Amino acid sequence: MKDLRARFQNDERLLGELSHLTIRLYSEKNTCIICNKKTNLLKTSIRNCYSFHFGKFKLIEGFFFCNDHKYVSEDSDQILKYHSQLATEIVDRGFRITIDMVVKVGLLRYRDNRQLEEIQSFLKCSSAKIDFSLSTIGMIAKRFLEFCKLLHKKYEYKIKEDIRSNGGYVAHYDGTTEKKCGVINFVVMDSLSEHILISEMIESESYTEVTQILRKVKFKYGNPLTTVSDLKPGFLSASKDSFNKNTPHSNSR
Image 1 (cartoon, one colour):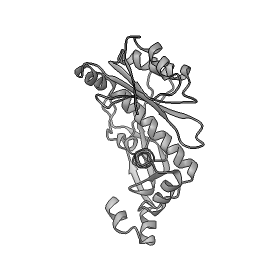
Image 2 (tube, helix red, strand yellow; image 1 turned 60 degrees about the horizontal axis):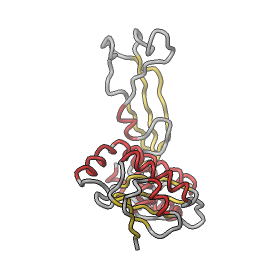
Image 3 (tube, rainbow, N blue to C red; image 1 turned 180 degrees about the vertical axis):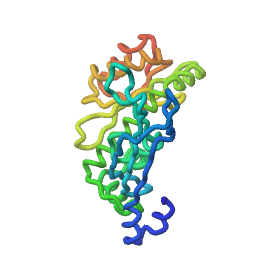
Image 4 (cartoon, rainbow, N blue to C red; image 1 turned 135 degrees about the horizontal axis):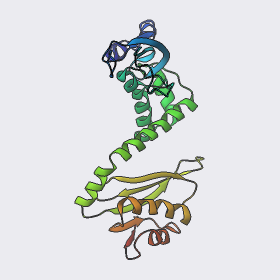
């Protein structure tokens, strides 16, 4: 399907037909996990979804249950439903934007530094032929960041392993913002491993807000070998009050 859309992206008629693609997915397991009897169809869910590779398509998902073991427990009215694992890998439950679209928009926004208007034009001109509003693109980009946070948390133990193997870390921190954004993305990076230790949105680079973030870094990773920042007011005192007072600090240029 991906190859077809790429090959015929200038054929409006064919793309229209491909955009009416219907995908039916059912539970990969068709027997009860308790009694191993065959399950029965409980209900179907129908959603119009939006994928960068497939364009707009209809997802029909079937949910199954066991007659003898319908509920999660005897004192619960929650039904034990069997559903497609593949469906949840394509698009999260309750959402219409697929995972591949979230990743594509997120990379365009934060890796390629594209503005929302540029992403909107890109999607309309791509083989997906999808026209999202700017607000929708903004929400998709924020959801990408939520995925990144979950991924970062999942592999936090590997970051700590790298820090230990390097004999410690160098806390290099700074804030960045866009025009008329109103908030600042404050980032603390380990200059030795180049891992991002923390990234949070703050209203200002005040002593109070910067100190709160640096103390979170200390709580997770301990005291750094040294800290690095520019000469913004309050950065040096925030560093001294957050980490060991003997931790050296140097200025970046």
